[in-house]
Length: 425
Image (cartoon, rainbow, N blue to C red):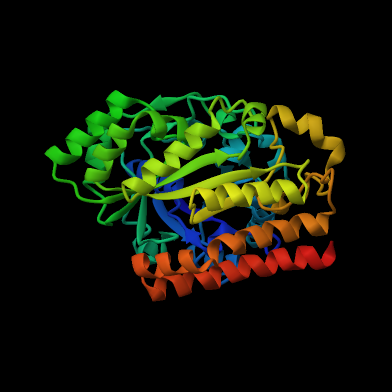
């Protein structure tokens, strides 16, 4: 069959991190590899990068099957694509997959969608595929886009996944709903790294910094195979704070940045999320990363019960710990987590407006301040951190003026989206 795989462009209402990062569609690259093994002709279209409308590519490729992947914020866009595809030809089979389809398949119920594939096996069965041999992602199929993929300061960045699911049980997190934890053999990971031409590699595990022995094996085999790359990973603060020796070794073989779920600046909030970490873990983890010149990308959940004093407390924590990069996420009760039912009567954005469920919109009514002030506090906190003279100088010295200017334009797009929310109130 002639198969077209599509990564959708975000809705204009989505407050998108794609303004400061565009990553490879790794799941589609993995799928392409299996489809080609089974004799199918495969094309991938990345609509985040492409400027032409979806109907242009449908007419150009004239596929038998179209597979579309996406997150919660893409639900509406995916349905729009399906409608366009079926208007071109009702004979084209439209399949939908991805993490949101796996957990919430009901959201994709639509006359124009032929099948919602909750697992890769569902898709393989639909197309009559068999996995003939252990396959690695098809990196040739996205070659025309490779120079466009980046994550903040990691330019021309490739993706690799070395484990699936998360071994922890934070009660706010959607990841634990996707699958139980399992990890690939390190030899298999090393074999895939050898196929990646890019210097910058983003390891997209839900939590890469988990198993000491596995990480030591990773370190040793990177050295043995003389693999020289830079790595961006996810990691918990408590692991980093208790395993500085591991962090030092990983730095030696290329660890350059860690996305750390700091989540909160008070112990009470950390406990409420079932994070099972301490504020001291956050402080020590940030200090260890800074000590070894590893970038810390801190993520924080903003409470619905916050007022201006809570935002000030968070800013003081960021300033005291000299955090340069922070992602502020308004508390979002994701579907199938315990919070969704708790807050469904307090939503100010209906769940059906999926494009706004992007971890950046305020979807639950704040308890102590207005919506307008809440958005203002988000923007002002961002700017007090990122535009402080010492942080600007730091970024320019480390990454160069051109890169900082590029990211600044992306940040301005996000600022304008938030500004419109403040104006509307």
